[in-house]
Amino acid sequence: LLSQAMFTTWEHREPQGLTLRAYRRAGGVADAVQHSAEAVYQGLADAERRCAGAVLTHLTAITDDGRLARRRLPRAGVPTAVSAAPREVDRVLEAFAAKRLVVFRDGTVELAHDVLLQAWSRLRDWLDRDRADRALHTRLTDDASTWSRSRTDPSFLYRGTRLALARQATARWAGDVERYPPLAPEPARFLAASQRAAFRTSLLRRGAVVGLALLTVAATVSAIGAADGRATAEHQHALALSRQLAAQSRNVTVDHPVVARQLAAAAWQVAHTDEAAGSLGAVLGEQRGLIGHTDTVYSVAFSPDGRLLASTGDDGTV
Image (cartoon, rainbow, N blue to C red):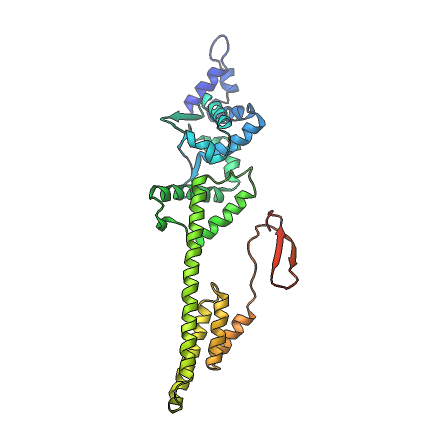
């Protein structure tokens, strides 16, 4: 801070030397960074200002405990990361470097001051506006780099809730390109690989569940056709099997609703147990919500045969 105050006071020097007036015009120790950063920003062209917002927020990371921190990045990779022209990015970086707000060393670039993250109100507003998404963007970028360094080891890919959150976030980012720069190639490849892996896993799991259901139903049919001499034993077996099928139906209702209905029907076919009746009632009475939009839905339409539903919303998606 003292160094920045001295530098900006020197920029406002008078013929007789460094004066108290120059020091005050520079903002003093407390406001030197704020004054310098805002002056650089105001001196940029409109397109460069938009680029500056993307560049400076990209040079900021959010730690696991929620604190803002500087991030050092390869200078050559910044234009790709923020999807901007290299010349435009260079002009922005050079302008801030000339005022000692950004520093270059060994082919990298980073913010010169930790205090810049708090002292410059404009940057603070950019970052505070959506800190949760910034934290997710930082984590996604770091995880994608780890995945690449591991030679795309699939164990580093996102699954389950983490993948769902990342997909929802990228949809929001795509709908607000001025606030969020497009996803860089490496994180984009990482997310695509995660989605492909999740799809393959879902297919395998679905195949296993369906296979189990078919085998169970086949065993049931075979059991029902057994000899009449074992009627009592078969009846007890049918009751147990019906209850087992009903339990399996309840276990897969969320992830595999169609299979859940098949299992519930099989349970009722095997034996009219209370469990089978409850399972049938659950799958027939279940109401499912549609997800996908991130803003108000204002139009829906069914196809004539009633098989397809299309919806459009304020998030710009169909």
